[in-house]
Image 1 (cartoon, rainbow, N blue to C red):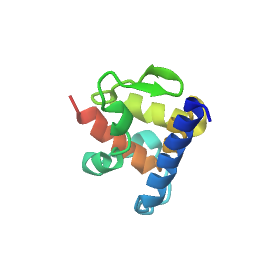
Image 2 (cartoon, rainbow, N blue to C red; image 1 turned 45 degrees about the vertical axis):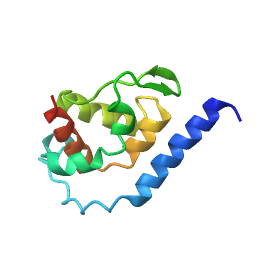
Image 3 (cartoon, rainbow, N blue to C red; image 1 turned 90 degrees about the horizontal axis):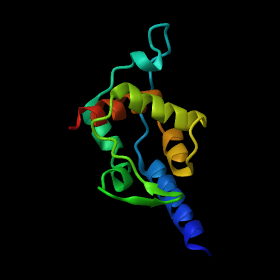
Amino acid sequence: MRPLSIAASLALLMVAATAIAQDPAPAAASPTPDSSPAALKGDPVRGKGLTYTCRGCHGITGYKNAYPSYHVPMIGGQSETYLRNALNEYRNGNRKHPTMQAQAQSFSEQDIADIAAYLSSLK
């Protein structure tokens, strides 16, 4: 196999394994007119636990991703709105990156709010 295929396969395996290992999120309350994704209050403590797989790529200064080859952006300290929008765009397929799409699809709206609250609190 080519190294690129191996790296992509390993990344997807890690995503699948972490999705299986995660505790199920508590059931969200029924949506109401005021519970749009932007209106959800994120819990940074819970968000820290959800970002353990993110740190494998985004937490390493100068890390280059193998698929495709580019520097992985540091996400700590980004605005909460930007992080929520980015994760929702990956989840909905508007942003293209296989690993990020798989990760984002495994998150609920509350998970995304919690992750954004934690990452935006980092400096």
